[in-house]
Length: 156
Image (cartoon, rainbow, N blue to C red; front, side):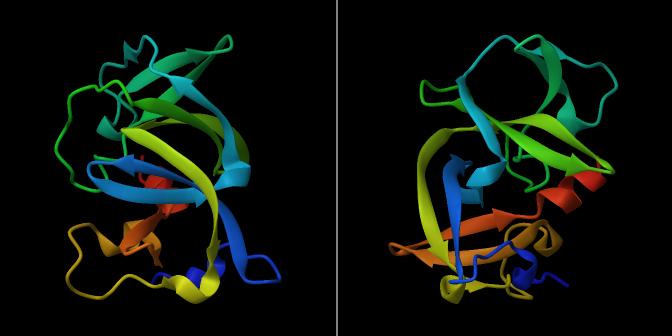
C-alpha cells in the first residue's frame, strides 16, 4: 500500500521538488536528492544488466548507473531530443547512498508542492504499476507523479 505520509513533508506540509518530464508525464522528486543536472553525455551499454540500469556514464571520474524511468512505468522508448537531460541524484540503495543518473526528456523547475494537494494513487485507472507511485499531486491543471524510487531501485 502506498503511503504519501512517507514523503519528507516539512512541518508546514510542503516539500521542495524538482519537476521533470518523462514520456509525456511530469514527475517530481525531492530537490535535496538532486546533485546536478547534466546535458546528455556518452553512455556505455552494460551487457546483461537489468533493463532499468542498462547504461552507465562517467560522472566526474565516477562510473554511475543511468536509469530510464520509462522501463518501470511501462513507457515506450523515445528518441533523443535537444531538451533531454540527466538528473544526477543521491539515492539510498541498501545501506549506502549511491549516485544515480535519471534520464529526463525535459527538466522543468524546482517548486514547492503541498501535502494537502497530494493523494495516494487510485486503486484502478492508472497506466502504471500502482506500487511505483508514492503519490499524485494536482498542480496547475495537471498531475505530478511522485515515483517511489526506493521500490523501483530495490527491484533492479
